[in-house]
Length: 544
Image (cartoon, rainbow, N blue to C red):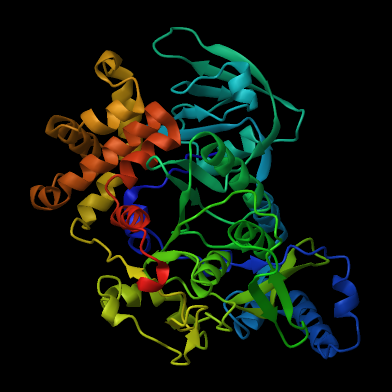
């Protein structure tokens, strides 16, 4: 597993780092597909002659066209064009892509269980995953992997994709790693037996204060509900958790039933959580199970423009039932439900079959008639000032819907927060972007020569007493300059404090894993601070 750790900047400003890949945002009902062919061959379809004509045309092109062409590419292009006429989330998944898609949503893969980072053409272990094969074999954080089986990987500019292929493999198979530890002259060799490795969708969980737990969910995979329960249980039973901050920022969605199972922990039995309805698919209601294991009192949900699909179901249900404060910025606006059908070529069709509706009856899907316009939504929000001013949030559907306590909410363009948190762009410049990318590699190099006796041995001391010096930032700047980012004093002055925060967060991850990183970031996060303020005030949601 490559190093997945987010930065505070990704939390604050995700749309300036990367565009949202709308094809990757989906909500699925996680249903078996045994009836797929029955539905497609039921006699309702009028596509038979069209499909035959398409194949016939492709055969003529392959046999007689003046130039050589890749018929497979032509066919894929025709399929993509066809689906573009429907909606942004109905997509064709090639056989090559399908394995990665299913792996991501299944919540596990088969491999050796490490987070790694490529530092100056060398693969360095960030951490062996707890309980995984690498940890069991004795691999340590900071180890450099020089060879994998008979393949030299150090100093040869190998890419992540090639490394994934070498490290991953069938459960029970063996891979031999050549590892350089510290400054030892000789390599150590480890024979590691691959196993099933869980991919965490609950990224971190810890107590913010004596009564409030924090849980960060990065997607809704097949194991999210189980992971959530496992994360909350010790906080609730052993640490006195009464309140919850649920962070769904940047969460692109996933399985609907995982979202509804998670929601069931916050409601008594038979509470409507969400319903779906389509042309062929009749209305289907999802209600709370009545099997809430924890008596969670106050809840705050953090959302932003990257929160989509299943994330919006959770936020919308909690908002409609006045069960939580929704804090942040307007969510993505994805209210379509997809089912995935296997295809004869080994790929799959992910087809929109229904819309989902929050308990009050609102559909939060935004307009998608113009595909380019749909994809540029986040850039437009930034340009029109919506991300920094709540009064500039555009209400696309003026139909009024009402929460259980009579508050007015709207659909047609995402879930609008109860408490708006503006986006901080004061430090955002090109120099920051470029230097920020070098922080993980710089930290790994810095730790090799650092005097560990000067570093705090526990997280509270690190958070309260340790600070990043100007000298460390200057070292980072020199490192970035040696890797192609010229020093820019003016832009550095604007982002120096943010770089200090990012560097401390990365050091926190190195010393205390994900809890260390998120503890640093959340300590300076206005959305988290606002959530804690509301929890401590005892102010009811309806008062917002």
